[in-house]
Length: 165
Length: 165
Image 1 (cartoon, rainbow over the protein chains, first blue to last red):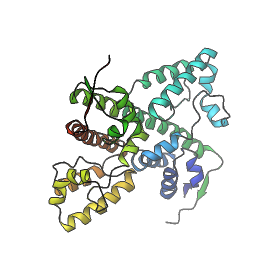
Image 2 (cartoon, each protein chain N blue to C red):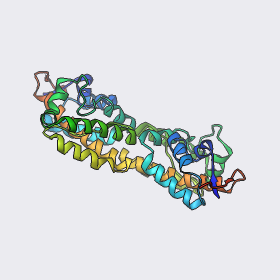
Image 3 (cartoon, helix red, strand yellow):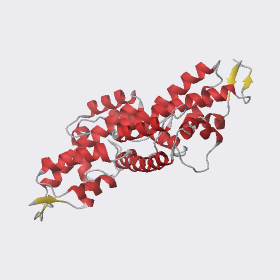
Image 4 (cartoon, rainbow over the protein chains, first blue to last red):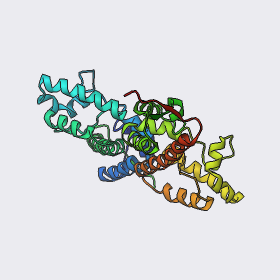
């Protein structure tokens, strides 16, 4: 017995097509922990620079009012609840400066984080060298993948397949 | 008095358009050392991930027989002089594996390096995590920029401008 998901479902964890293809190839998994180990190995060792940028580009900018999915709203719940109008303006301004410098949007695993903490992190990380910031962003995306992979396992969409091996 | 070059000349040091634009904006330079300091700061701190990939993409694969510039041939002189047919085949095969894994070509400052050393480095670096390898490639490209910037200063193309400040 094992847990299997489609490439589309794996791609809902992060936008990289290579990640989704390799996760589907590595499945079925005995449990969430085994899937998480595979996801970490694939995300950090098998996805290339273009794949990371591909993933980053599928996120909305944090705090934007653009039409975003319910999942993103849930992930940023704490941030929205603690945001003042001036903090939101500041966030938009720093998001823009960040993207100009690094070429990708500011990524942070927002789950449970209030707006002051997010703004503080954004300003601190803006000072980083691009190679350092890329590595941090990859780590934040890994935390997001971890949460979303857990959701996949919890959801009713889980499909148990008989292991034919 | 100072040394100035056009954006096109700065872009001949490395393919990134942002690098060339910022170098031209930082010029004129009093001497080569001042230009090198600016180049290091711009390459490591001001060029983003896409700019690095843009630069990497302008290099021919090392050891290929494709039509490449005289400058590239000069830079790879030691490698070609020490290459056997089987080493060349091995290089092509490992170049291909490297590009499949990392998404950009194997970059090494070839100047003065023999083929056995280059092949050895390629096989060792293939084992790296992509984020580690990206940082090494950026460092190798910086060495190439340093050599090419020195050539710019040595060439007759140097144009001394009166510093109006």
